[in-house]
Image 1 (cartoon, rainbow, N blue to C red):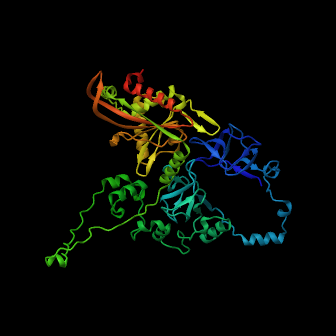
Image 2: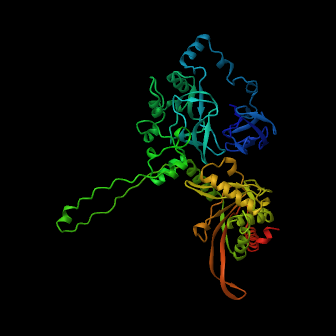
Image 3: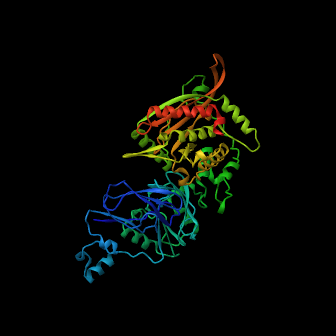
Length: 542
């Protein structure tokens, strides 16, 4: 049976999409997972894959044209299938199935519970192109609160970042379907908003009769009686129980919670300076713990007081299970896919960094100028990629994609793993521009403020552990890139120059390549060019 594929919502603010390119034509076979089209949203151009198998029977939005979210994008079905009913907006059921008697219709209607007027069901949004499920990091509203269009409802943790999710509706928050710290697939019921005084039981019954999975959850977040504001706040989600201290719920940003956990700070003792008393990063940074009361002296064991020595084990075995974040799970999935699908090989060279160190000192002596060695490496990579386009490619099964632009991803370590913000058109940037953008994006990454489009589209990646004293290491390729450069520390050691042993400064770099696209000789030539740029930095300024 033919299915209608609608224009997807690929970002939290997307209201309409433009078909940048169709990857399938009418009559083509489509497998589940095939890329149907490239959709341009308000934030980025993303690949949109099919969740169905069959033949592409109809294209509803031509290339270059836009359409609102949920508009018919395409129809997939069996070859030769009649889709006139779908095109006319009619159901595909047979006439005999449609023509129920008046009595049957009355019986069917009686068995269904109608959704009250003015009630809106809010589902878990797809906040990134790779997001499959989301975790509620924090609710900014409680059951019974007034909600205006544009208000922040909750903070949603995706596979890439924690993002604020705003309401598209006005009304009263009637129901919370996913508690803080809980995860749910995209499109599961997140909340219900409607007129104050709406019968929540009727809403939940209507959701259940409509086949909503989330409606089958216990109604932990609703009260049929008229509870106090305080009780509603505590009942909005079971996950907040641990954060409630009798008088109500503790509001804190995800970063503040993480910082408090790392520092062993009890959030109930912290006074929030954010909106509505919300605890934010600066509150944790400025918090001063009260000195604890002195513990009473321990009583000596009887054996010790009697003059004998008894061995008592000093510790106990303990384990703790920490739930993996969406970011951690996605990193694991992507790295496993890369390692097990791309045939990696590694090439290492040692670079003389004496000239680079001298050049950096001269550059940084200028007013308001700050350039790091990593900035110099990124610039050298961008210029080397222009000379060796085979390294700036992507493997796509039947074709190899040559990227004529250079977008370099710079790996940044955060508490929950590794993210890769992207410097677009890096080859056209100067050293100071690279340094400024890397600093800005790294700061946003550590504060979980990176947007999905700031982490998409890289053609090559640089990973630097030199600042941790690591001299040499290998990295897993950040697909769909064909290569990633691992940068070690600059080491002072004896070297041979002009037949003499002298003190020198060297740095090892390792290039991991996908052998499907980059041959060994090509990778070696790339490293030779990179080495030449780093050992003669003036050539990067020409």
